[in-house]
Amino acid sequence: MIERLALAFSIPVIRYAFFGMLVAGGTLSLLGVIIVSLHLTAIRFTLMHVGLLGAAAGLSLGYSPTLGAFILVIGTSVVMGRLGKEKSLSASSVSGLFMTGSLAGAFLLLAATGVPAMNVFDIFAGNILLMTKGDLIFIIVLGIGILGVFWVAYRELQLVLLDKDLARSLGLPVDAIVTGMFLLLGIGVATALRLVGALLVDAIILLPGIAALRFARNFGMALFLSALFGVLACTGGFFLSLFFNLPLGASAAMVSTLILAMSVLMKRTIH
Amino acid sequence: MTNIENQQPVVTLTQVAAGYGAALVLDTVSLSVEKGELIGISGRNGSGKSTLIKLILGEIEARQGLVEVLGTPMDTQANRRSVQLNIGYLAQSQRDPSIAISVEESVLLGRWGSNFAWMKRSTGHDRKIAREKLELVGMASLARRDIRTLSGGQRQRVSLARALVRQPKLVLMDEPTTYLDAETKEDLMQSIYSLHAELGITMIVVTHETFSSEFFDRMLFIQDGTLLPMGASS
Ligand SMILES: Nc1ncnc2c1ncn2[C@@H]1O[C@H](COP(=O)(O)OP(=O)(O)OP(=O)(O)O)[C@@H](O)[C@H]1O
Ligand SMILES: [Mg+2]
Image (cartoon, rainbow over all chains, first blue to last red; front, side):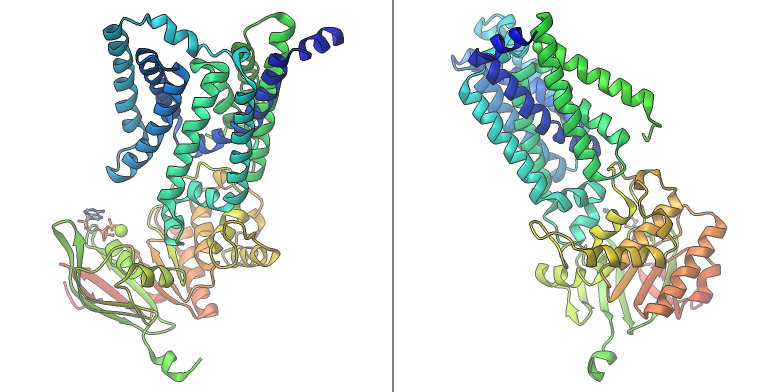
């Protein structure tokens, strides 16, 4: 077993994949605490669909589908954040608007340009073994960025999550903070898309946060547990897939699901 | 503090009109609140009580007339901000919190911008004040609890502690006793009353409770967009 591990880790791509999953699991999962606390669960689902449209656009235009997904997801997250505020639309109305629109747009675009739909979906299955050193560096920078945001704005995030009106009356730039969170969410979802694929983004971004919020009694504990569960899911999934020759995204998602299932079984429910 | 400052009213509204969009809710409202007064405000649903509170808080602007709070005219964004930092505000509806946060931490957050913000961390002093205020409202024993697990009345008390944690010069409470049972209502009003007696802070409290008139220095009534002394109208 050790031999097999050593052999695997002698391959650069495997190393990149492992560290990528480790960092993503420990940092992207922190975003889940925000998603759940701000009731944005609908939005991350929308961002996945928008990613699909972006990939279709990228393919149709002859660029990289990943790049297309990235740009569109980040752009949309900012627009959605602003829309929710200026037109006072609820998060779920905004996401409904964008989700259906982008799904329809993706299919229309693919039909019009004659790109086979499966090409898009392929990419959205996520393929971590295509990860380059550059990708790894990007994930590490993003991870440090996320940790930095939580470190610098620790109290500010708490305030916005607790009560936006109160935060505003204390002079916090609430709208800027919310826009920043949407942006971070967009980048996080776009990154997770690449790692584990569209349908399994939740495994990294959402499920650890939900499980953490069940156990935690304060904010610090919620963040810590969320990161811990994220790391467990991602590294656990990594080794599962390595030893049993399983797809990585699905393995990580399975571990993540088991953690959440355990938290449901073990803990009194708060919500 | 000089005599002059003592004599200056804490809140002055002069012929103020305010509303939302095309609708005018308050029309020619005048009010002067002295330092240390405990004022009760009542009126029918939709009469404009919350609007009056938000006007004093600087959340909405006057259409006409003059609003002065703590000696500062509330006519610029900068003025409103600086005044807000000295006001403790208890909103009419408390959102169900979905964030995991301890009771004490949630109270501590009310001090944001006074002693800590962004990179500047909160200190033991902030914690101490938060704990003191929790004690004042009788919630010290629940300081470590997750706020999501509190009852509505307990949450209301925590919000009150949060409104006080900045050591404000003026406290505005919009129906602090909503959702509470009759006994808890009296209990909370009683603690607001003794808080006022103890701290001497100027307080304006919106309330529907008829029993509470005895607690206040003055009771005012909003009707047809104007503010009347209680008993002055039908
Ligand atoms: N944000 C808003 N936009 C438009 N109209 C509003 C807004 N807030 C309040 N109003 C209207 O202004 C009027 C006064 O509202 P306000 O909230 O001040 O009443 P209130 O006296 O506090 O009532 P309640 O006892 O129900 O709390 C109402 O007719 C209400 O419909
Ligand atoms: Mg009201």
